[in-house]
Image (cartoon, rainbow, N blue to C red; front, side):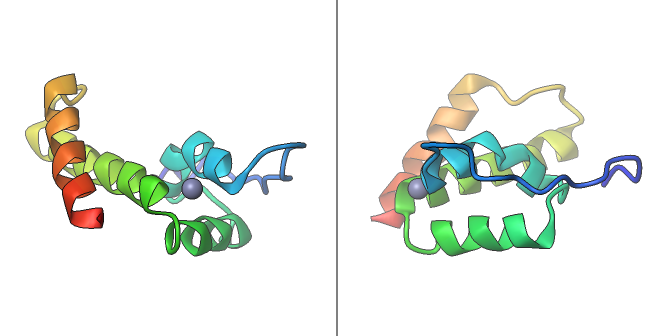
Amino acid sequence: MNADITPVPHEPAEGESDCQHVLTHLYEYLDSEMTAADEHRMRAHVAHCSPCLVELSVEEIVKKLVKRSCAEQAPETLRLRIREQITILAR
Ligand SMILES: [Zn+2]
């Protein structure tokens, strides 16, 4: 976590669904740069929305792999493969 970053609460944008909220702020969540309230909103949503849970899980795994391999970015093929596997599991 970057100590210079102060989490900013997300006012739900007009017309923004919880799905959009999750997808828009995915990386803030993974980097623990969210306020407790936003984190709660995120978790509460993915608990009953498998497409969002899949997205979150994919990014979480990719992030860990990238960190371990010191690569700049995970190849898109890897991301697709992980997503496929998680989608099967999430069914
Ligand atoms: Zn969703």
